[in-house]
Length: 272
Length: 272
Image (cartoon, rainbow over all chains, first blue to last red; front, side, top):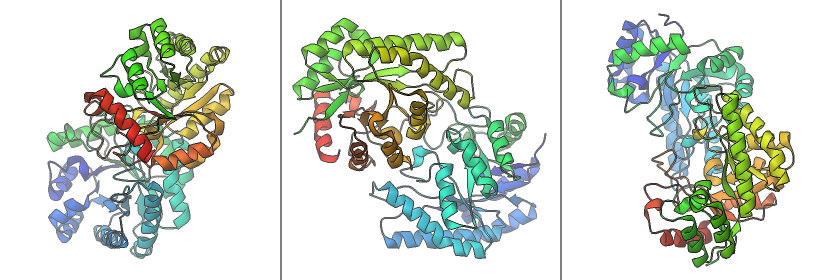
């Protein structure tokens, strides 16, 4: 079955495999692209991670993740900005095509969503010169509104693109079906995004969803119409891979990871 | 403490009290307005429910709920429309100020969200003449996007108002803080809504939220800035009550309902 155009976000097998095991697993299944997470890279060590990626000829379609900009005071926000600059450096070392930003929710102890959103735009603006210098595009990932409080206060593609409009070159968006499938404006905002789409994540919405964070579905097991969304994304000019990213504590994280990859490939061919 | 301007959606004490117990409980606490649910009214019998409301001099700020329009075939959709007309009749008998619409999610077996949304607009259009004749305004309640698949495919105030624009007089919106607090367009869409705001529900977003449906919070226990949202709603011209609606299987539904009402009043005064 076809594996071209498929990337595996390594969160999908994070419970079972180390970075090297995951990279080698992908290669064994004929998958040529990955998106690793910072904790996986940190556990391996950056130079070993770089070696592992290069040895296996892997394309790195993104690096997860920067973000988490809001903080209760200037020190916390400065610390987040410094950490994001390090994430840019790591992304550059890995040859990643973008740094995915999960921007962060409300600052600790705050109910001021507008303030959190302002901190996000400010934080991205502050790391942008460094990201541009390193040639690492920043991909703002709008997260589902159910994460507005604690993970990301950028919750629609419209909102992410408004930030892109404000900040100019070097910032785009990551479109994850799980987070945006419900949006009545999805088609029009994808068209608006155009070439600013830097990543296309795929993951299904299960009914019922038993946990807000870690009960995401394999494509085909839920209610998302992947082909319709893909057609919109391709019409906007995106030519990159579809990247499978599934958080699934009760299901996919408990399975044989080779079986997980086999089914990712199967569903990618069948429904995506 | 002040109870003027406070209404209790009877879902808040549904696990503990019958309709009559709830109405008498509200009266005992000095609360003069309620919003009952259809199953509560059905359990009491409509004529007894009407008597209970009148005997206690209760204002009925809404009736929950109509909706659930999408269906896999014309028969199912027709059945939903007939049922909604009966809900309008019940709302009229109770003297309710509006019928709240939870519009329904995807049709059974479907992944076509656009089709579900079209069925919703069509369904509301079909019950609207009857609702107008009965002088029962229809209040479209945008539900949080996490319910798009299985409860309501109207997920933003903008989307609800677009339907109102299309259908004309007799349709407005119910603004529930729990469902809309995250929306980057909330302030502007509330201003756009103006006098079409027919109900203002209050309920807090907890961090963490342990269940997608029944882990909603008492005002003050979560992250919502109630006063800010209330100011926007009042600026739009809404003069009705704030209606407490909390689904809480693990917490408020297990408590002494007199204590629940006491705390509703307390928090209404402290944070709303």
